[in-house]
Each structure stands twice: as structure tokens, then as C-alpha cells.
Length: 117
Image 1 (cartoon, helix red, strand yellow):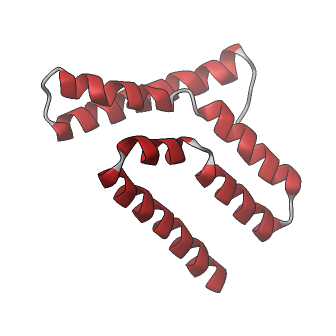
Image 2 (image 1 turned 90 degrees about the vertical axis):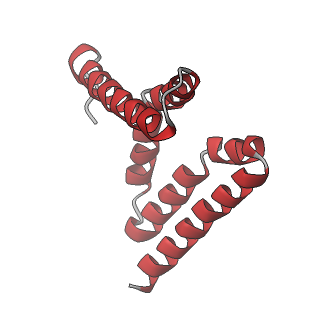
């Protein structure tokens, strides 16, 4: 139980730290978030919890395969804001666009390329 609390605390501290950093420098915060730090933390926790290197490795591969549709959100949010939509509507449109992109992408992975996640 203490490991769950430790993991939650470290993860929360990281996210809060990045949020605070973004107030001062959006570029530096974005640079740090773009690094696969959260993936690395998750891989480490998964390996510590399971002692299964193959499982941790497969997790990393799955993250890599599922990253491209996430770019839809990163592209749509600023476009919607620049088009004059308010922030919350822009966020909703970007989230729905991303959901559609994930659905299509996973379908393509499975049906066209034969990759099962």
C-alpha cells in the first residue's frame, strides 16, 4: 500500500511541478513534458511491481504506437482557439477529435496492419 501512495505522490508532484513551471516558461515545461519522463516512470513502476522486463518493454512499445493520434489534440486546440472558439469549447472539440483519431488509428492498426494492442 505504501508503494501506491509513494507512486501517487511522486506522480502528482511531477504534474504540479510541470504546471507551475509552465506559468513561468511554457517552452521549458513543454520541453520537459515532451521527454518521455512519465513513460519512463511508468515503465520503472511496472517493472518494480511485476519484475517482468518483457511486460515493461511491451508497455513502452504500446505507448510509442499510440502516440501519433495524441498529436491531433495538440494541433486542434490552438487551431480552435485561433478560430475564436472559447477555451472550454476548444478543449472539447480537441478532445473529441482526438477520440475519433484514436478510434480510427486503432482500427487501422488492427485491420490494415494486423497489429494487436
